[in-house]
Image (tube, rainbow, N blue to C red; front, top):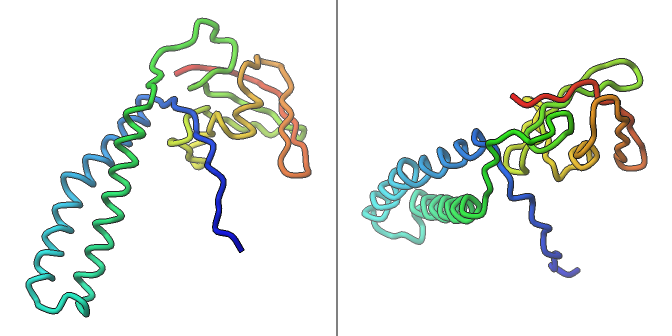
Length: 165
């Protein structure tokens, strides 16, 4: 069995100001708080002697690699992000950052916000613009029907409201 994995399709480079702040806060925490703590723990563990059998040392080095990897990812990602902090000219259409209220066939109303792939949080109702739901909503207006293919099934919603906060 091959270990080949096809290259990932890059996500959208758009982000809300809140999402950018969250990523910058995480980067700051990892670089200024967490990494110095782990570095000190590794240094203390190294002073104990034989490093080949020192679990604290081995685990600390692993933590440092994970922190450095995440820091590199966040740094590169933030360099290429486009912060969208303006409302579109046509606020009746669904664009990035919009809060969209959808009604399904049973009359149940769901509210979603279209955000970038780095901000997805279904508990808050944040849906990526790269997701099937996000792609189906882009460019639609109030009273438009939205069809989303989820696996073999197809879901249908009607747009009840579009707002930009």
